Image (cartoon, rainbow over all chains, first blue to last red; front, side, top):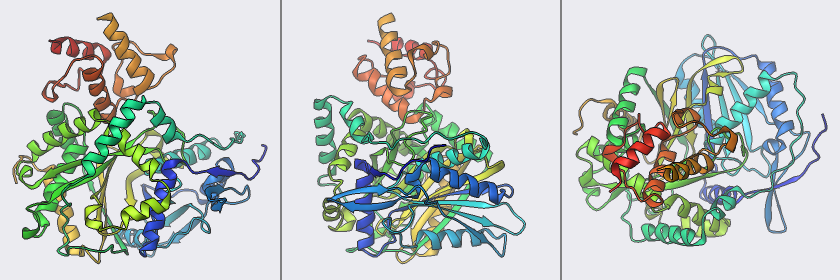
Length: 443
Length: 81
């Protein structure tokens, strides 16, 4: 095998956007814009094989073990062929799930400087008599939320294909988001941006559960928790989505229950003129794509509702599905991508985000779809659960991520406990799950 | 209808679920098995409305019919005015 020489990989326009957000968050005392993926395994992985696979990952994709380098007003990933992605092993004293969540909270609340620290790290949690849990943690400027699964699939492939010789890959130079944007005619691009900017102007502020009208950003520490909805209740949620939306579009029912649960926990006097809004991440990779792993390639469409639309869960689900279709018809996804790519220089982002936070932020939300078949086993051990986490400030102070894993909905929640007390956060999650899985549509 | 079928297939397998021309599936193939997901259905509905001039209302969308090119063509034919 020929080793790749060290090289400088440029960040694409979305990487730069996420880096700008990362730097803004650090300027307000946050650890940065970090993501975590948790794989809960049914057994124990072979540690040496895992180490070897992670080492091969760093050889094959040197950017995964790189550092940010600022030079000539440009930011790039500086690779080093001898660098490795760290794997930390944590021997837990108990099988208790709370110990797993507590460690995840500590890790995601840890300051991350991608010019000094590796942008991608692995943590293997060994429980005394239960299955292992693998955490993957990365800086958003390296890759988006969906790409975490792609990195794990690649690791799985390297674990399975022990004997093959890896051909070194040349660094990817293409700016994928700009290539996507340029695939649309200019008139559609202009209309998309105009529509996106128009929707952003004069909007009502987002209703949050905090009883404080936050005039400034509040940082962590983050609290994390998760729930698993069993197969029967998951099948009922999917069947309801098919009935109400015409196909298994899970974002409308998930957001409908999120908004209703927030509404039921928000201060009474706070909600009259407010709206509920969440950015829905849209993965731009073709189905089955394995690349680009270490790049962001995602856009967003915003989905909102107002208080008077919350009374009936199923009507709200239909309405959100209809609005989602309208967002695609107006090329809101393209408009968001262009706007993010244009304001990707961190100073512009900091200027926008630094203004009054309540008017600039949406609730944290992501539906990651079904876990890829390649991940049903990880390093030969069946995967029981999968959770996604994103560090976030307050407001919004609360983020929900959902995915389908082995026929079950896996739900994870991140919250900033300084703003959303633990009892309120768990009360919200209980209401959300109850509303999502209950028969009957009213309040 | 064959012109519409060609345009639909070109959009489906050229843009939404990109495949080499030699691998384009038959009209009865299950599109969900080759990568059709909720976001791509949204994009497909927008394409049918804007480029083929046929609006399919949400309540008429049937998961069984949108799973195949043949079913989609029937759905489009039913909603052509």
